[in-house]
Length: 620
Image (cartoon, rainbow, N blue to C red; front, side, top):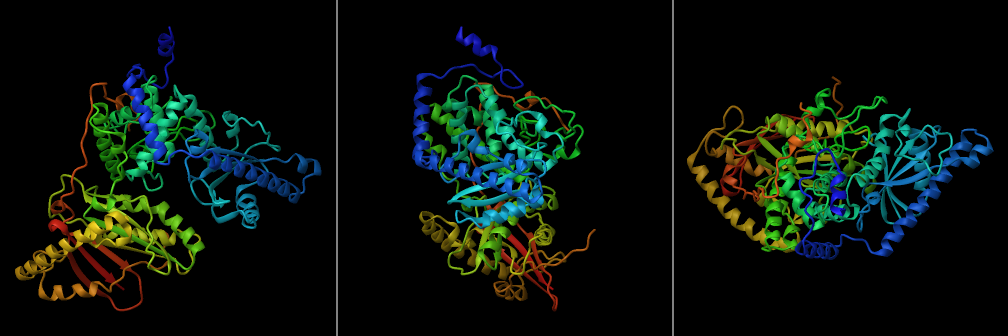
């Protein structure tokens, strides 16, 4: 009878794939999985969880006091001042119950209609916070898609959003799930409110919330270890993963966490992107806010991995995903699927699933994005802006090469401790798309130049000293600080061997002789005059200094996105990089507007395994 009741309840748009319940073996594997997660530091200790609750309560006191001050300052009666109220609600991983040690707390401040975001929140509340000893590293980002203030409160990272609702007095029991809260709200307010509304909807649309939470913790841990966890750079973030996991929970309502992790990779290695993942139907209400619909919105047809939020207005939570990052994620999905299949056959263990991915061993060519600022506060603002725009560099590279070159960001920043200035560095792996002919010229000069110009000229808070440099580096030229200590010795040994091969190729190329073509590419080996210029490139630093520019599908059913059965599985392990087929004779041009004489320099750096990457650098 119990089984019949479970079958009568359908979660999601389609019927479940399987109602199979866990066996004793599945239950044992779930215990083993949770032990690995505990050992990996995924769960919080009770003391830290209690501290976070205390911080949220202190933040509530701060915003209530702030709203009363604003109410008095705007001339309202003392009765209004006494009744003035603001709420602090959480969203994201904290609201879903899957926050871990060191993770930030996503919070939303809900205030009355007369308290605005631009002046009251980003100026008056900002001034209150900056004067508090408990608050550090305060960074307002008012022009973001979702305006936010980032700071640390007693060492815990906080993301604070603001939403003004159509109430003169905000009640303590305000129901944010009711769509009436969206009346007369602007789009930033709707986006701010939807973080909480989406989290609540997810928990209501899964068959077993505890199984969902354990599975989500596991997938977040996996994504971080494998370098595909970062919504801002075009990978998956917490909300994206939560929606993907929730859909798998709907398809396997009786499965336990070990089964759900395995089915997660089985399902999404076979998913037909860009068919959307949806937990419930999309509803277009009368409030007039745009919803995801590629039949009416042409821009929605360009999304590569649509993962649709379940709360109105339904939008694509993964619009940041590009061709390059989708390809990288699919490789990781296939690798994980193969490991999970081995675990089910008792040929492997959960530890294999969480083996770290070594980004700097996986490509032969990289873009290195260096940013500097005059002090730590400027660097914090500058770094946040550059990181939020890195996906634009990926998109520009894809566009200018007509999709022939993939540009995959590393979702981490790096700091060279030997440098005294305030700086950090980002890296992006470059790989030719399978099927591109060896030796075909790939030119990304325009992409890198446009990126640097937009970064500098679109940043409203730019100050002198904020600089950005984009350069090409080969695998064997990567700086030592990007490697973990245990890998550094191995990397240095590899560099020594690669340098010997490079010297041999240099001698051979100089013996062959050749002339640069009109396009700046080498048509043969290096000429003597060309090889003499190689040394000059070491001192040639390219970058961009501030300069003002002149102004100038299918909405198919979700069921079509899935073709999977319990017996089917696909597994393509990560392919080994073959340097000989990567980026041969590609071009990268670094342009820095300066006053002076124009001079052009050509240099050819031979990569590993015979991979060539031609760089043209020009200074004005």
